[in-house]
Amino acid sequence: MLPNSSEAELAHALGGLRVEAVDRRGKYVLLAFEQDRWLTIHRKMSGNILLREADAAPELHTHLEIGFDNRSVLRFVDARKFGRVNLFTSSAGLREFLSDRLGPDSLVDLDAAVLADRLRGRRGRIKPLLLDQAFVAGIGNLYADEALWAARIHPLRAAESLSKVEVRRLAQAIQQVLAAAIDRRGTSFSSSYRDADGLPGENQEFLSAYGRADRPCPRCGKPISRMLIGQRSSHFCAKCQPLRLRRQKLLKPRR
DNA sequence: CCACGATCCTGCTAGC
DNA sequence: TGCTAGCAGGATCGTG
Image 1: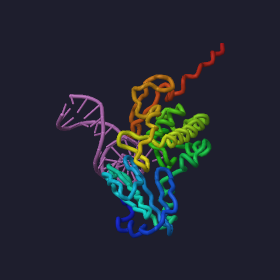
Image 2: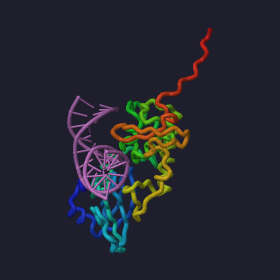
Image 3: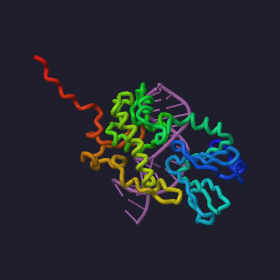
Image 4: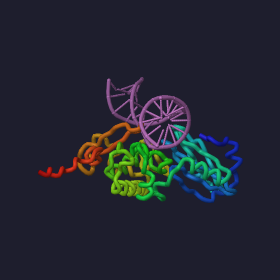
């Protein structure tokens, strides 16, 4: 879980330093320490970042603890061990790491023009592209399904085939879906995301497509479909998100 | 550029 | 009630 440092290096590099800022790029949480030292945490599927009192009961599957002199402790807890913690000793190193991996941030850098520009010439399907963090950073499987549902775009649509109107709808849907999820403090399933206080969010109560296979589409009532796309389970409404455009009403043949 | 499969791990649950 | 197969919020790497 420490791809670019050892435990000893971590402790040595950060011990005694003040945390000056906490930030985010895509799905990476950034801790900015004094002396241009940085820690990134990626939760992957099952990781949680908790802030507890120093004497709070220990959590199962804690892999990293950072104690602070205000008697709080940050814990990175991850049953599946997919999460990753990286140490950087220069902002240049951090920038390189992030720019190698992340496209424009879906919440702050994305609008219809940016999305249209990046879609141009991409021959793959739209859904796997949305999950590619180098294409657009910050969208995960469930939010991709929700955004495509909101924009009424089938997940198998060829990326470059989206119309201008569809691109605008999609850009807006991505931001709206993410902003709403954040307002609801995240999406939590049985043993998944918890906030820094260990509390689940409420967005799971408001999902329209993800995880709703065979249940009615909130828009049209037709059962939500589920299929594997790029090895990821995908949920959509086959009626509201048609793969082929509805047959144009044919002009009456001139006679 | 794109599709696909394997891989890293463990916990939960649907179904028998 | 107990077991087990299958599935899960993600990213990366190799192959074709």
